[in-house]
Image (cartoon, rainbow, N blue to C red; front, side):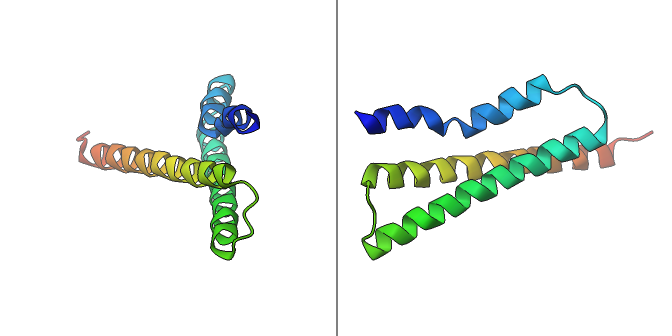
Length: 100
């Protein structure tokens, strides 16, 4: 029953969205800071996943469910960041095609 309670702590991406709505737009520096913060969070999650995978490989895993959750969380966050990157690149390309 303890692992079910820990699933609610997976909401890292939900926190990104919540933080984004509470900030007031102040220009490009705020966007850059938010993007850097999101990338740092994804990096931390990826590092946690690496530790979980290493523990699985060496047999030192204490809770298999928590390791699986960490791996799934990292995969989901990476997919989200890749989609954000793709959308940003598409927007940049569209701006380049815009005629003045």
